[in-house]
Image (cartoon, rainbow, N blue to C red; front, side):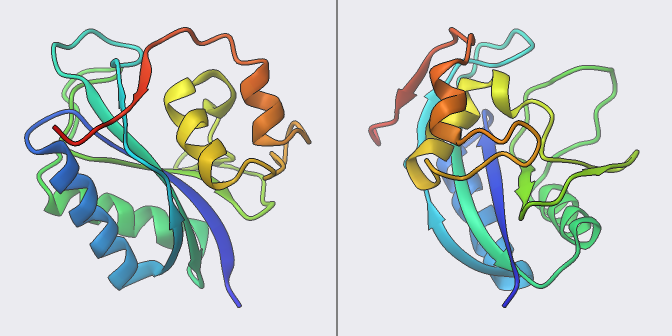
Length: 165
């Protein structure tokens, strides 16, 4: 049967849409079935300054892999697509970023992975695409739906539906 996992993908360097599409193809080929995906959203960088806007989407994936196996696959895909290891602390521009937002109803906390992702409730660039594909998903820690969480989100950053230009 597998576990339903919610992902966030983002890119703000190069052909952003192509990097996300390629990441989705590799995720599908190696980790499980992509069940749904959101529209693309263009968003301001979050937590750092950059000239380049991000493209972000969320996707739902059914997988037989464990959370750490999934994380390792995503890190391999990021590396294959040209993501470099950070040289400094904090957030930086990147060709691709793949985050596990939720892994079923699991709550995990380790040095490698925290699930649900600790930033979901405060990041509109995650919540807007996620509410599109999973409005009634119940966050395992807060016991609120994504729809309820977005209604109380204080993030005021720009998140716009992306029209392919």
